[in-house]
Image (tube, rainbow, N blue to C red; front, side, top):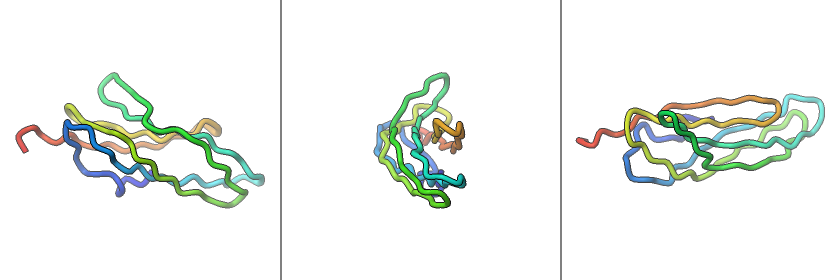
Amino acid sequence: LHPQSLPEQLGTKQARESVSFTVTNTGSTAYNYQWSVRVVQGQGSRSVATGSVPIASGDSASITRAAKISCTHGQVKIVVSLVRPVESIDAWIACRSSRS
C-alpha cells in the first residue's frame, strides 16, 4: 500500500480516491495473486475493489484502483489483502472535522 497516494483527511461526502499498492512475487514460480481493498470504519467493513494479477517469479505488479470512500467520524482504515499467501497491509485516514 502506498499511503502517500491517499489523502491525509476525508470528508463526509463520498469521494473517489486512488488506492495504489504493489505485489511482489518472491517465489520460484509464477503465481496469480487474488487481492481485495476494504474500507473499515467503526464496526463496519465494506469491499471497494477486488481483482487478480498474474506475476512471474521475481517480478512485481503495481495496482491502482479508484475507491468510493467517505468518513463520517474519527478515522477510516484502508486494508489491502492477498488471499494466498494470506497477507494484508493497511493505512489510516482521519475524518475532516465538519467545522473545517
